[in-house]
Image 1 (cartoon, rainbow, N blue to C red):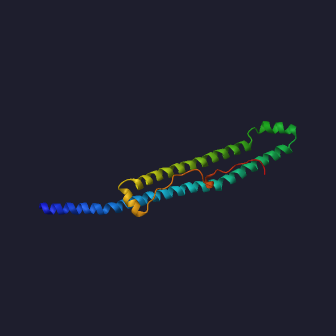
Image 2 (image 1 turned 90 degrees about the horizontal axis):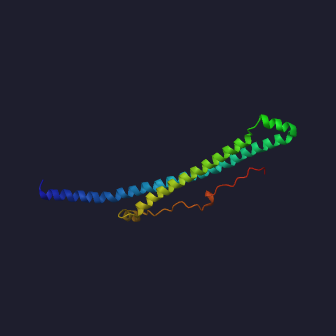
Image 3 (image 1 turned 135 degrees about the horizontal axis):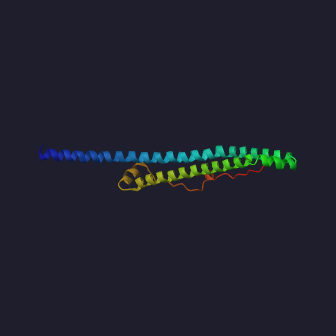
Amino acid sequence: MTPASRTAALAAAVLLAAAAWPALTYNRLVQARAAVDAQWAQVETQYQRRVDLVPNLVEAVRGVLVQERTVFEALPLGRLLGVVESYPNLRSVEAVARLMDELAGTENRIAVERRRYNARVAVYNTRVQQFPTMLVAGLGGFRVRPYFESASAAGTAPALTLSSP
C-alpha cells in the first residue's frame, strides 16, 4: 500500500467515524429519554395501584371491624368474657395488621420507582449536558428533564379512617 493510499484510507476512516458519531450519539440520547419515560410510567403505575388497592383494603378492614363490634355488642357481658377467652385472636387485629403491611409495601414500591426514575433522569441529563454530546442534544431537541419532586396532588397518600362512616 502506498503512502498516498494509506493517507486516503485513514482520511476515509476519520470521515466515516465523524459521520457515524452524531447518529450513534442521537440514538443513545433517544434510548436514555425512552428509559426516563418508561420509568415515569412505572411511578404512575404504582400510583394507580395505590388508588385501586387502598380504598378496597380499607373497606374490607372496616367491614371486619363493624362485624366484630356488632357481635360483641349483641353478646351479654358474661358471655363476652367466655367468648374472648375462647377466641383470643380477634380477626380485626389481623386485618388491620395486613392492611398496615400492604400500605407500607405500596408506599415502598412508590418510593423505589421514584428513586429509579431519578436515577434514569440523572443518566439522561448527564448525557444531554456533556460535551460533545450536548451538540447533538441541542440539535435533536433533547432537553434536561426534571427530577421527581413531591409536590403533586397525585402523589399524596390518601388519608385513612377505619371508623364507621
